[in-house]
Length: 148
Image (cartoon, rainbow, N blue to C red):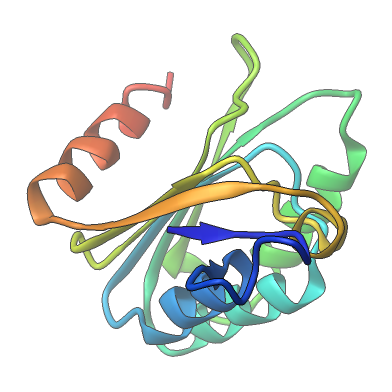
């Protein structure tokens, strides 16, 4: 289990931010993730570094005129060297609110936290890390169904 919020961290529960950073930094082949909102620069830095290492990255995000900050994050990712390793999948039908990261088809982080500084530091959020290749593959296939 992972969490955010001062009252939850340190009681045998790992922080969301630490888990996200470890997953992104440890990826060797592939990262597939969703984002309702991307604003945390340290997470963006980890994604940049993964792309530069040659990790294949797919990001599914809610594309809405109401969320111009996502466009800024997507533009930043598209300008990273080796940008052919990164595929951006805007979701325009419905509202993509899921928060999930799949790394190397082995580990899945599913939780409630947006990829923002305040979600990682101020909010009380919960999530689970599941290390199961079948579940990881199932989540990826589910996300690919959004790529309309």
